[in-house]
Image: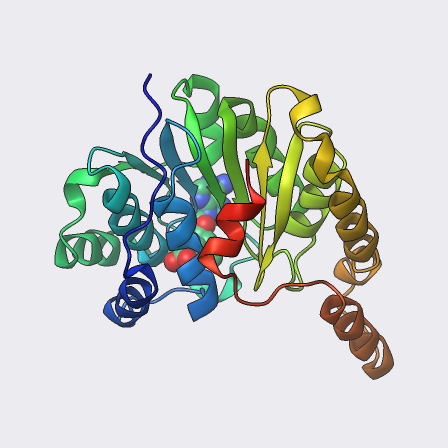
Length: 269
Ligand SMILES: C[S@@+](CC[C@H](N)C(=O)[O-])C[C@H]1O[C@@H](n2cnc3c(N)ncnc32)[C@H](O)[C@@H]1O
C-alpha cells in the first residue's frame, strides 16, 4: 500500500477554526482545542490505513474525522462504532436507552460526509473479533470505565499499522478508563513513541519495532510519572475539597494545552 502524502493545506489553521464553527450545532463533548487536534490527526496521515472511532454519539467527532481526513485523501474510510443507545454507566447524562441514531444520520447528512462513513451500529466488543482492516488512527471515546476502555484498546490496537496513532478521550477527566489504559498500555509499552496530551485527549504513535520508539522514552517516563499521580483520585466519588484541589494541581502539571500543528508534525516519526 502506498503511503499517503504527508502535508497539510497552507491555510489549515483557518480551516480548523471554520470546522469548529461548522460543527458547533452538533451536540458532543469536545472542547475547541480538542476538535482542532482531532482534525490534525485525521488530516495528516502518519501511515496508510482506515480510521476507527469508538463512540460516536451524535456524530460531532465523526464529522470532524471525515472532513479532515478528506483533506489528505477523500477515499479514507472513517469507521464509527456505537450502538447509539448510550449503554454505558459512564454516560448517565446520555439518557440510557435514548437513541442518538437519527441525530447521527442527520448530522452526517447535513455535513455531506455520509459517503466517507461506515457506521457499525453495535458495541465495540462485538465488532472487535471480526475486525481486519489496518488502522492509521484509532480514536477511543466509548465506554470510559477501565474494563471498557481496556477491552477497546486490546481489541483494536493490534490493528494499528506501523506509525499509526492511538488517541483516547477523557484521560484528564474524572474517568478511570482512559487515564489508566493510556498509562498502563501505552506509556509503559515500548512500542509506542511520540506521545502527549491536548486537552483531555491522550495520543501516541505506534511502532512495530520498539527500537524506533526508543528515542521518546524520557518523555513517556515523564508523562507516566505525572499521570500516575492522578489514578488514585479516579476511582472515588467522595473526594474532599482539598483532594479535588490536589487532583487539579496534579492535572495542571501535565502539559495538555493547544497543539501547534507544525510542532506536532515535527514531534512524530
Ligand atoms: C462521550 S460519547 C461520544 C462522543 C463523540 N465521540 C463526540 O465527540 O461527539 C460516548 C458514546 O460511546 C458510546 N458507547 C458506550 N459504550 C460503547 C461501546 N462499548 N461500544 C461502542 N460505543 C459505546 C455511547 O453510546 C455514546 O454515544
